[in-house]
Each structure stands twice: as structure tokens, then as C-alpha cells.
Length: 467
Image (cartoon, rainbow, N blue to C red; front, side, top):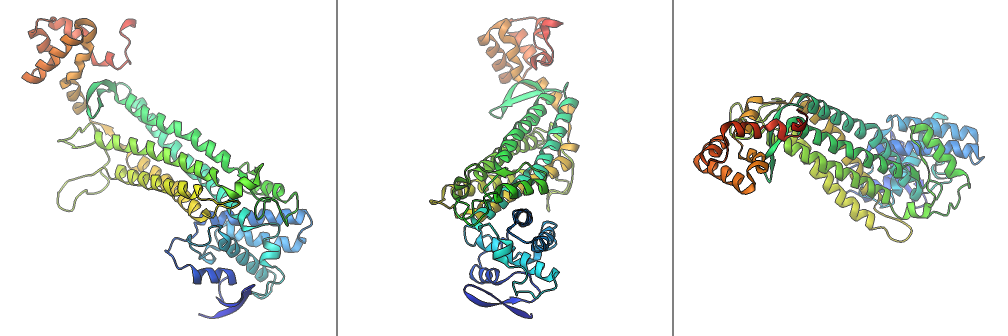
């Protein structure tokens, strides 16, 4: 591979001739051969957004000449579009401020701008990575600004729509199943009846409740530390640079980004990222509950509960013919477990900031974006390949209702708790129906039993006082 020579304050170093990155990126590649987890594409895009807005702001404020600003903006637009992703090779496991990735962006944009101007790569003329691309900036405010942009865009444009679609599908099932009376279960044991619609409606409500939590997290992420430079003082930046750049970011993304009122806090700590991860964890908890309920209700199909029929998407066993497994629920619960683990990492990293800088930035945004991506993809898959096609087994549900001993609860107002318990125990011990046990004990007639024990009324869907 042909090489060119680039230099930084530490001296000269070889760089692949066909790459736009420069000396500091090359040093990071050499010094941090740890794992293979590269900076997420969403973060690279966000860095392009920051650099484009910064170049425009600096031109407006007279800090950059118009031609230099235009060249940087053109290069940044290619980064935003994903056209230069191959020129961002650095891994997460590097300096905790993300400085090397910020410099990777500065070098790529400078060299691409130089190429657009007809210059020589690595010459730093007419565009310098520090003096021009990084004008008025520090890695300490640029990187967390990009973190916020990437996370807010991913939640707003990807995860939230996926969750809304899942909620709507569950609502549709709840409406369709509104009159399907079934047995409820507490402690995994038979309980009083409810409708399948009520059960599915509870799942939909869980997702509905997660949405405002995510919205609140995005609101926190919309406050940016840009303009604070190294520690929050704004050293070497025009006083209006932060506000102008934030306004430019808002215009590019369509989200309401603004500058945070205390840049010192937003550079030294990343509580907004921690809070966002907490909202994702809560969403993951909701999804795990829903997925586990669905696979329990679908268990069997003959030796389990078997009340739901799930789409048969693929064979479930290499040895047992005809076996079909609840694979979409399994995938979703694995994703939920990963998100919960990511949240632990983010919490530890958020608590690990020291004095004027949190130096865990890369691992925080890597885990947060992975959680958003996994939840988004898993929700879409679960909705399309499981929820949309699942249907109740009405005969199985009816049989469970008919055989349940917990219908004896409806006898409490008429016979009292103790006598109702006698009925249930006799029916269980002798393998007979509650109706027969009630009559055999001389506690009521068959006609009275039929009038008192009506599963539909027990769900609250039918109000006996209005009949």
C-alpha cells in the first residue's frame, strides 16, 4: 500500500495514501489496538453535523473566510451523508475524551477540503485541521455535542417510531380480542378471568408509558455544550460561537438543539446520557415483560398454555420434527438483557468523571447507540414477525375458563369466602366441576350457581347492575 507522510506536533508519520485521515489518526491506530468496536456511524454523522454548523458559524462571525468555510461545509456534507465512513477507522477504546476521533474528523475534513480545492493531501493548505476545521472548538465540547446529536436523532427518528408501531399493533389486537374471556394468572397460577383484550391492552399501555420517558430524555439531550471548548469557559471561541453553532445544528437536524446554560456541567458530567440510558432500560424491561408473557401464553402448543398461536417462521429444532419456537420473543428478550447490561456500563462511566472532564465518553455513546439500535431493530422484527400474526386459540381458552377453580371467587358475595373455598377444594380433590361441588355441598342450586358464576361479568366488561 502506498503511503504519504503527514505530521503533527510529535513529528512525521506514514499514512495510507488513499485515506483522508492524518497523523493523529495514524497514531491512534498504532497505539490502541484494542478490540474491533469502531465509532458508530451515527456518531460520525453527528460529527459531520457539528463541523458543518461550526464552519458556517465561524464564517458568519468573521472567524473563517468564506471560501475556507465553504470547503469545510462541502466536506462535512459528505461525512453527514455517510460517503466518508471508511475514513473513520478508530476504535472506541481510546482516549476517554474522544480527542482522537475529533481529530480524525478534523483531518478527514481538512484533507477532503484540500482535495476539493485542488491542493495536496497532508499539506494542511488551504485548510488546516486545527486552525480551520476545529476553530473555536475543543474535543471536550465537540465530542459530547456529537454524542447528544447522535442519540437524540436515533431515538427520535428510529426508536420512537418503532415503539409507536408496536403499541399500535398491540392496541389493534386488544380491540379485536375485547370479548375473548380467558383465565388470568398470578404467581403463574390460575386467577380470576379477564379478557384477552384487557391483557393485550396492558402490554400496549406499557409501551405508551415508555414514550414520554424517552421524550423527556431527548429534551435533555437537546442541550449542547458546544462553545464551552476545553472546560466550559469558552476559551478561544467567539462569545456567540456556541449559540450560532447550536442553531445551525438545529437547522440541519430538524431537532430543537440549543446551548446548555452551564457548559462546565455538560463537559464534566454526562447525566443526560445516563438518563437516556435509564429510559432505554425501562423500555427494555417493558419489552421483556411483554415478550415473556406472549411466549408463556403460546407455550405448548399442546402440553403448555397454548392460548396464543404464533406465526411459524422457521423450524425450531434440528432433531424434533415439526417443532416451532417463539424465536421473536427470544430475540427481543436477549436484546433487553443487553440493553440492561449497557445501562450498567453507562452508569459506571457516568459516575466516573473527575473534576472538569468525564473521560468515559466513547464507551458511553457506544453503549447508548447500541441500545437504541438493538431496541429499534428488535421492536420492528417482533412487531412484523410475531405480534402482527399471532391469534388466540379460542377453544383452548374456553376450556381453561371452564375448568378453572378460581371462578369460585364469584361465589364469595353469596356463600362467603370460607364456603367458596370449600367448593373449590372439593372440586379439585374429586375432579368435578365447581357447579357440581356447590350443589353436592348443598350450598346452592344449579340455577343459582349459573346465575352467580358468569366469567364475562367477572372481567368487568359486562356490568351486571346495568342489565
